[in-house]
Image 1 (cartoon, rainbow, N blue to C red):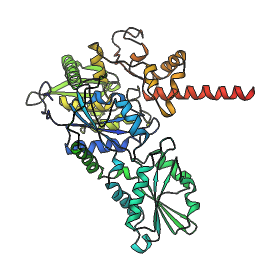
Image 2 (image 1 turned 135 degrees about the horizontal axis):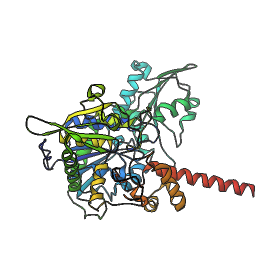
Image 3 (image 1 turned 180 degrees about the vertical axis):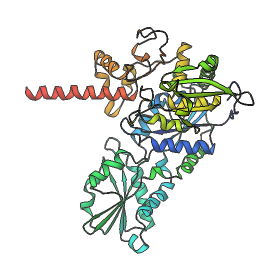
Image 4 (image 1 turned 180 degrees about the horizontal axis):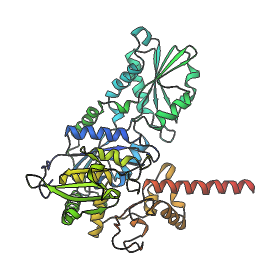
Length: 497
């Protein structure tokens, strides 16, 4: 990669990028948090030129995750505990992958196994079990270890990783027995306690995060009261999920090394035609964004809900920048909390000004009262990749007339699973969804995919219209709700008939 204009650190041209993929959630920050934390640790290790994240249900969305990456070589690692519908259908579809190796938009993208398939998971499960239930060997030999997975009846292989793990753990002979239980397939976790009368029962969630399922669904289903529950003559321990284990960084590096060394990996497939920003586009967008801010000098610019300005230069002549909330534009710096760690921008973008989850980072509810100061060009770009993922890149491509826009009909057509039928909603209903989800009181981007252009909203030339090139997961979720409501209304009508 080229040196940033105005100076900055040189990043190796040949080094690869890492894209960590998680499920995410529209309702809770807990689902994405372990993926962000893992990315943070890997960035500090500097094993990759770039470490980015992408999610299905929240920003940065999978469909634009590559628009954050300047490297030509990318390794994609699913932060999931099993193979199944998400790894075999959703991720390849949203990233435009055609196999283990894909060449598109100037990148060679290599798709790794999910972290849950790594042999280290055996040790992680045992460590979690011992942390919560430090039994002596004699008591361990009388205990039942339960590995709880998600599973799904929609994909026959979903529980396979969990079952294979259980078989290997049973072979170690440490516990009386090791069994698998699932949320959404047999054997289900709800009947677990009725099936055994053991003195000791240790439950280890085979999940990536301590989100909704680990924190609410499982404890509620089993009537657990924290890490230890006494139920008659049975003591039940409930461990932390394996996906939050600190050694997961080693697993990711080893999965990448495994993919590098995979036989046949050196055979490069043909280039696949497809839209999206190339590495050069991302680099040029970074340059353009920095120049746009620098040209305004101390007066600064407004970008979405932030005020950013050139504030000083370092001893070497490298420009320095400040970013703060637009509402704090004229406040004295001493009144604002000063952030120094660039990773603070991840947490800043995660919660709204009322403390709620922000699955959409361009929602107009960014919390105020902070500032990043003394940022070099690289640091400034990193802050904005966390605050507004891919937004500066899409802004640049739109100005060049090269932004690839995907209308609702095309996005709906590529959906599967529970979203497979959303294309059946009418154009009028899509228009209503745009009014609900894409109005400026809900999102600061302009829904270019819906035909809304720069001159269509009547807000004047000073309003920043950063384009949205494709319907986001929030709108797709609303579309599914619309479809479900229509289905229930039809069922009710049939029932009355």
